[in-house]
Length: 123
Image (cartoon, rainbow, N blue to C red; front, side, top):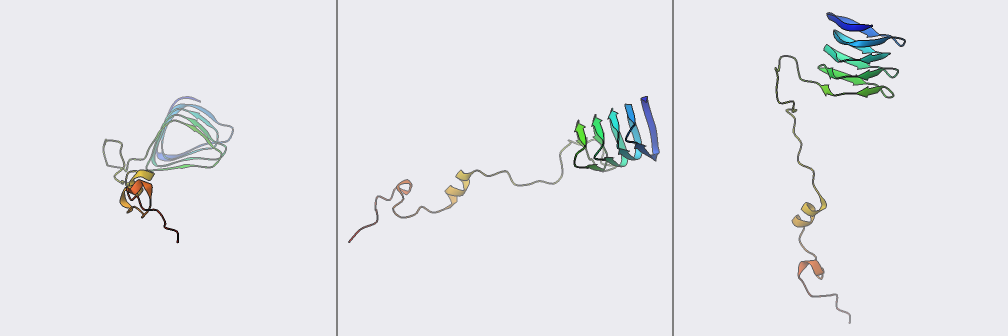
């Protein structure tokens, strides 16, 4: 099938033998076959293990099953959020390198990096 599939109020399923070259709009979109186009799920998009998608996915919930093939981008903006920056509201601390950890640890006596010239004394 070529063109545009616009079934925003309905579920759309592309079967295992299905080949679609179109943008697809639906409430819940399931892909078991091949899609070359963008997917716009009002609620969810699911790409099954046998599915193959080349295009972008926009939905509140997205599932990519192990073994499926996907090339594109995913936008999971919540409904009604409008066009934002594309950034998640969740944040995580910046990644740390080993150097940050060393700065916070006090130097050990006798450690040449600490500037302490003492070494273990032998009797």
